[in-house]
Length: 57
Image (cartoon, rainbow, N blue to C red):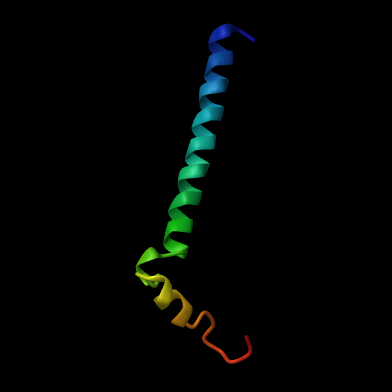
């Protein structure tokens, strides 16, 4: 394998890693939307906040 071909393989491999990471970040960012997160200002509010919506926990 020539040096140019070796560099091409290395660059293509790095590009595929970053492309997969970018796609994973895109889908995870949409799956866990931060706009729906509750903002807790004080420790007292954190103690009063109901963690689960049901009565089983």
